[in-house]
Length: 261
Image (cartoon, rainbow, N blue to C red; front, side, top):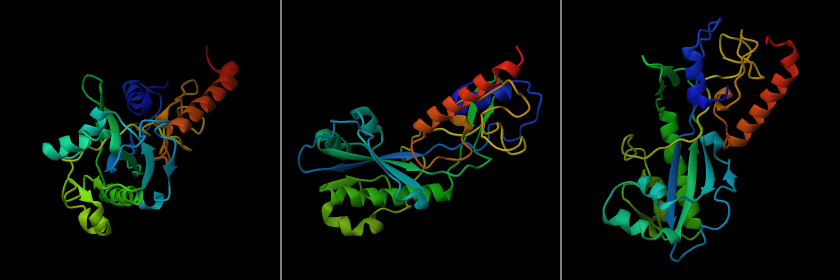
């Protein structure tokens, strides 16, 4: 099965498995993400090339990754804080924008989980820890410094006290980007990298599958998607997900002669 980090756990939760799996649906991680924007004085070639060719893991110990990115106007607009003249002015300068995608490396906690409701539909229960929120604030400071070093005239950061930080205030980044204005429900935090829920591990007490994706206690049932991650990856996970699926397929092929028809 390969339903992803939401639907694979939900399908197993709806099934009558012959084994108790207390970790099923739990330890969901999400790479909470922010799109940060800097504006240059002149148009730049932000629409050429592959938008996610580079990443920076220098700040993994601080709880976040940075990736190059460039998004469509709609995606960019909804990730800016506020409305009105400043928002419209910045959006009118898309051809001058430089963007950085921030990915928080969130901890795998048992309370962050997939459940199913009375109709059997999946329900996501996820809470932000103080550590993740602090990492997202720190990531904005790091990105702002990169923007100004690259020549941006001003930067938009969701945790800043004002809509713009200008190059004249580049030396006050720590003072201007703080946790206080960074409020859940006010900031557009997104996620495209859901991981966990059918985590791999050594036994049924703390995991759902073995290292080959076989569900504990069910020798004919395999999981082959991002739900296998035992914790959050420290890089964009898509290549690892493909590698895991390939690894599970190898195991299934090797086990076919002994699996029940």
